[in-house]
Image 1 (cartoon, rainbow, N blue to C red):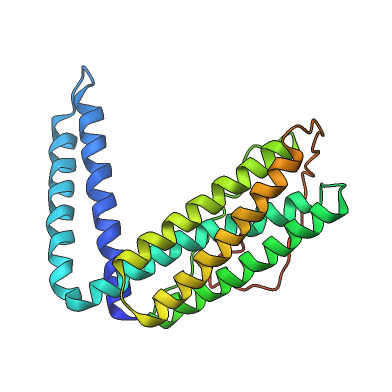
Image 2: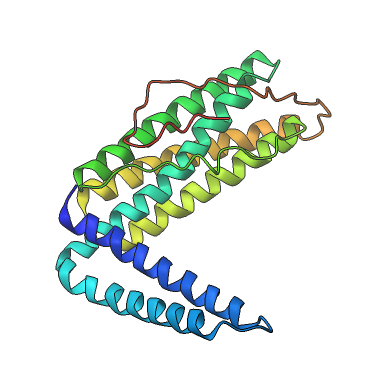
Length: 227
């Protein structure tokens, strides 16, 4: 991992520490039996963390730009990972063979997107960090609701790509974001056509509690496929 990436992560931790110290100080300050010594200590911790966070930028220098890219790519990676999970999970619960295969195809393309993003993150010296906490959501109860959820995810991915294209100038990065954006636009078009077909459907979707998704993608992070 490159130095600027490590320093960027430390800067984020310091900012989070300062925020938590301030919240704790305010919470304790509302107590009738105020612990002035603890409030004073939390104030010093928060102030020092803020100062150190600002100073960290001086040590990063131009490297802070790379860290900003890594954070952005990891944000995109979380969205793509949600797509991998949802498309493959929902495909297993659809009786319509044509629709099931469409979802599997979408899921496979999200895997390629995630692999592309992960390679860029590693090349910049960062670590791919798909979060497991966001994967388990309340299951949709109908095909209509399921498609609406996927359309929402595709819209978010397109918006992120466009944001990145407007901010970053690296040819390799803009090529990747442009490619992913076009794929997600195609997904949205197909999903809208599918939605028109199923929007009046009352079919109930039974989502399995246990699910083993595809294992052909590897990230330098904790195993995210957990219950």
